[in-house]
Amino acid sequence: MVFADWIAIAVALGALALGAVFGFGRLLKFFTGGIIGIIISGFVCYCIGGFFLDIPFVQDMLAKFAGLWGTQEGIFFDILRSMHLEIVVYYIVLFLLVQIARVIIVNILKNISEADNVVISVINRVGGALLMAAVVFVVVLLIFQIVHWVGGGTEIDLINSLGGSCFKLDMLYIHNPLGAIVDFVKGMFA
Image (cartoon, rainbow, N blue to C red; front, side):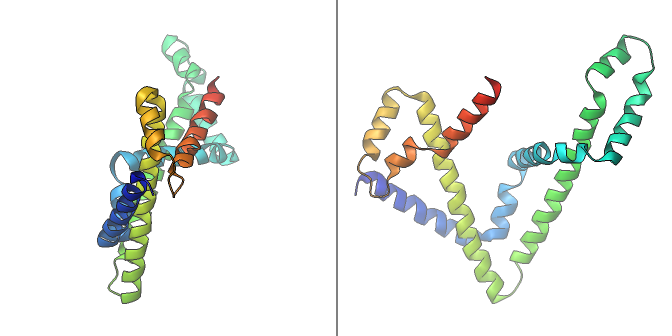
């Protein structure tokens, strides 16, 4: 085992212990609040926005809304028509609804997971440990991706320190799933 394996074991055990101490409910509320919650809501809007946009009722509402300035003359109304203000307003309203739904769902899950029941308490602790381990894993992948972007001597040193790992950390670095996502997004805009 190389030194990186011992660091991985220590980080994993620390994450599991910390997750078990805080529990699933508190960690879920912490990780889905603030800027991360906004990012999650934006991603959900991106995923479901097109689906709801194709519903005839929504199409009719947007057409009526666009009709408010559709027949008006002037540069201001030309700008509104060219930027499709109705779609912008649609996504703002969808974002607010997703934010409200996210807060409600997280609070329900938090309250359920923190109920005064022995079985629920154990599930809360195990769920917290697993959630914290998953978050730490994603952070490690993100750090690996940043080191890959920086490159140079830093990347070479990291690859050398991960070489021969029992947990195949060098393979995780080379085949980082975040790198595939970045390549996919780059391909969309190329």
